[in-house]
Amino acid sequence: MRLFIAINFDDKIKDELCLLTDELKNYSVSGNFTRRENLHLTLVFIGETPSNKITSIKSAIDNIQQQPFDIKFANIGKFKRTGGDIFWIGIDKMPALSSIYTQLYNNLTACGFNIESREYKPHLTLSRQMVLNLPLDYDNLNDYIPKQNITINKISLMKSERINGKLIYTEIYSKKL
Image (cartoon, rainbow, N blue to C red; front, side, top):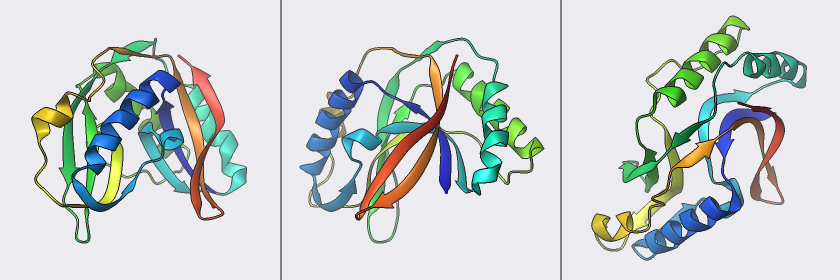
């Protein structure tokens, strides 16, 4: 099964993010926009994993030492790709978020998982393979970014699978901070 560890958001934040996604659609000819129920912030991507390794992942999560903390969305950005870009919303730099990533990375690699080693740059993907029909008005889009601090008090182990052609993310384990 395909797994990742993430921060999920409540319905209010997802609704606000959908307003941003809807506005982003106005600038596109095409794109694969993240469905409301799949909006999340990835902490660590694990990838294809046999089910007998889930206990090790749960242990790695359980060993995280972090109190609840606040995050805030920052800016719209993109990763250039052939065939359409990936558009995302960034997160203001937050030491607690970096700490969780580092702890997860260390705990998982100590259990033998091959986690990509790179600087953690937290972002939430809004669309993939997006082709623009007009230049983005970043000032306009920034008006749609949720402005409030968001309290993070839980991290989740998520399963990613395609069901009837739809990408479905399911929480299979969580830890309260």
